[in-house]
Every structure is written in structure tokens, then in C-alpha cells.
Amino acid sequence: MNERSWVADGSLLSVFSRADQPTFNFATQDMAGTYPGEFLPDQTPHILRPLGNFAPFMRGPLANSTSSYDELKTATNRGEDFSFIVAPQTTVVTPSRGLWLDGCTNLPGRAQLFLADNYVGDEVFFHVLFDAVLYNGMLVQSSGGEAVYETCYQTELRSRYLKYAAFENDSGVFLPRFDDVKNKSGAWFLLNNMLGNFGHFHIQSLSTIGMLDQCRTLFGSDLAGIISTSRPGHPPEDHEEPFRMSAYERFGVDKSLIWNPLLEEGVAFKFDVLIVPSTHRIDERLAFHPYQTNVIRSHLVHDKPITPGKRILLSRADMGNKRSVANFDDLEAALRPLGFETLVIGSMPYSEQLVTLSDAEAVVGAHGGNLTNIMSHPGKLKILELFHTSQINGWFKHVAALCNADYYAYCVDPIEPNWYSSFVVDPALVAKCASTMLRQG
Image 1 (cartoon, one colour):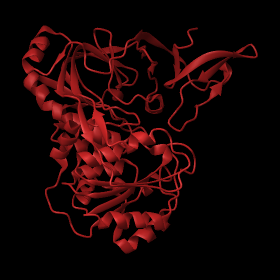
Image 2 (cartoon, one colour):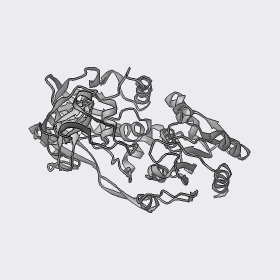
Image 3 (cartoon, helix red, strand yellow):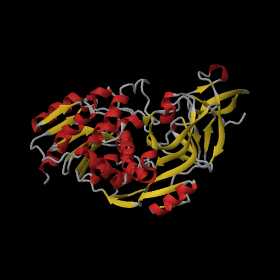
Image 4 (cartoon, one colour):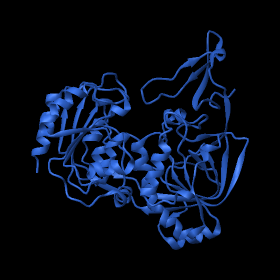
């Protein structure tokens, strides 16, 4: 058996021998810093299925690429795979007004990336691919054999939501094997491929909507459909479909064109033309391009003045103990004298979330998707992000810079040394940080 050719529920298995008995080992580390498990063959709890052929990876524009519409139209008419550069690579300065380290002993090396004054936003592009195949709604193979991987790369995320996922290593990817491949005629746009994460969906998926007009320039009204790979009816994401659809409506997307390939499990789809927007990098840098931010803000920003004294403390009560402030009640009491009102906006309808933050003077909140709503603010919002040392990535520092907001941060060690852990803050110190933030011009 090829030790790199089998998966169980999306997690890579390798085969090795212990006491002369073959053992399956889950070989990929998840975001919590642990390995899912190790099982003897008779204990393996999942059905194994073979993967398909090994293919190269294409993370950037194809060799055949341009920013000229004339060249793109010519290549499209010839049926040649092509990449169109929407926005070039850019450098963005992301100053931090203040960073408070509360007795941190577990600062990783990526803290230097967080403290850096700038980052490089990768170029923005979309692929126009002919006879391309979409696997599991997550992986695209072009007719030339490249595997165009258009979403976050953590195997842990793939295996959590997909019954069978592909495995990648440093040089390529094993493609899943499907017995059923269905053809889809016309030109299709892969709008969204983020599963189960509001923050990623908001910034990384909705931002591709700006490319729809460019694609209509190429294909006119003949755009056959828009692919949205949410997972309706699949706990805990069963609430996501109405939320996503309301977000699409806010962005002016014709909902009648939206189609979800995940409704047909175990089927791969081959498209006459498949348009695949570039992803954003998902690493410690989390470098976003101003283009995507401007696309989102053009749909979301409410042009109204800041309401003096409107200060919001974001609660993650709707998320349980996941990545939350463990002593939130104490924090709430410490910030109340400064005029902060506690809100759980994660349970609000999409438009209501946006309006709630759009005229705020200041926001304090733990790292999480609800902070992405700062993009609806016209500018000069004061933000104090609370996070722990396993969460240092600069996400909201960069977003704040692109939204003309004043960013501050408070960091402490987590209760457990992993991304999902909750953390205990010093309420008096956070209140002091917030007071300092509010006094700044």
C-alpha cells in the first residue's frame, strides 16, 4: 500500500509497523496543536477510500496571465486557461497605536510579524479555466493538470467539514477519486469556498464579489451560475445558509443564480468554464489586499457620523467557551464605568450587525469573526482587540489599517496552549488600556 494514498474522513493516514503489526497514524497536526489519533487497522473508525492522482499545485497566477482585457478576451475565445490580474502586489503600512503584553511567557516567533510596521498584500487575480473539475467544493483541477487550491490550506479545516478531502505536501496534492463526475455547461463563478467561519467568509469570500462585474464583461448575461459552497443542514453550520444568503443579497448578488455543489455528496463537477478567484493567504501574516477591503467597504460602509459615547464590548457568549474571555463578567464590570455596553452581535441578522458597529466610537472584543464588522465603519473607530499568545497573527491589525481605524491590542497567555483556548484577562489592566485608547485623538 502506498502510505500516502489513503484518507479517512479527510485526515491523512500513514502506515507504519509497531511490534510487527501495521498501524494507521493520523499524520497531520490540527490547529489545536494535537494529532487526531492513532489506530490499529481493526480499530480504524472510518471507511478508507483511495485518493486519485498526484498533481502539481498552482498557488499564484498561471503562466498565461495578464491585466489586459483584450488579451484575456482573446485567450477566452481560444479556450485557453488564463489568469487575469485584478490588482498588483502592494505594500501596506499597518501601525499599531498600542500593544499591552500582560505577563506573556509564551510569545512565539510570529510575534515579530505582528509587530512589523508593514506587510505585502499578494496580487489579486482570477483564473478562467476550461474543462476544470471541482472536487468536494474545495479543490479545482484545471485541464492542464494544475490543482488550483482556492481556500484555506489547513487539513484540519478540510477534514472537519468534508467527508473526503485531498492531501497536499510541499510539491503537490493527491486528488480525491470520484466515480461520478457531472458536467455543468456555461461559465460558472466560484464565489465562496469558506466553510463554517464567519470571519474568513466575510473577508475572504465576500470580497471576491467585486470580480463578478469583470466576469460579466467577459461573458455578459451568459454567466450560468454562482457557486457557493456552504454546508446547509450540517451541524453546527445549519444556521449559515440564511445568513450567507442575506449577505449575498446585501452585496447585490442574484440569489437565483447561486448553486451549492455540496448538496450532491460524493460527486465531482466538470465545468465548460470555471472562474476561480484567488484566495488570501492563510498564515501568521494574514496579508489582505486593499482591493478586497475596498470591495467589501463599498457595499457595507454606512455614511453617518460617529455617535459620541457609543462604546461596545463584544461578547462571544454565542460561542460558549471557545476562544473567549473566561472571566468576562469581571471584564464587563470593569469597563462599564467607561460607558461600554455589552452586545452579542453574532446572533443578530447580517445587516443589523453592520449597522450596530457602523457609528460606534470604540469597540473592545476578543479575537473573532464578529470583529470583521468593523469594515462597515466609515473610519477612525477605536479598536481594542483581546487575544492570547497562540492567536498572534495580525489579522485585525491589518484590517484596521485598511479601514482607517485606530488599533490597540492586549495579549496574555491562554489557559491551554492552543488556538481554541479561552484566556483570563486582568480586568483592571484592560480598563486602563481602554481608557488610554479613548484619550487618544
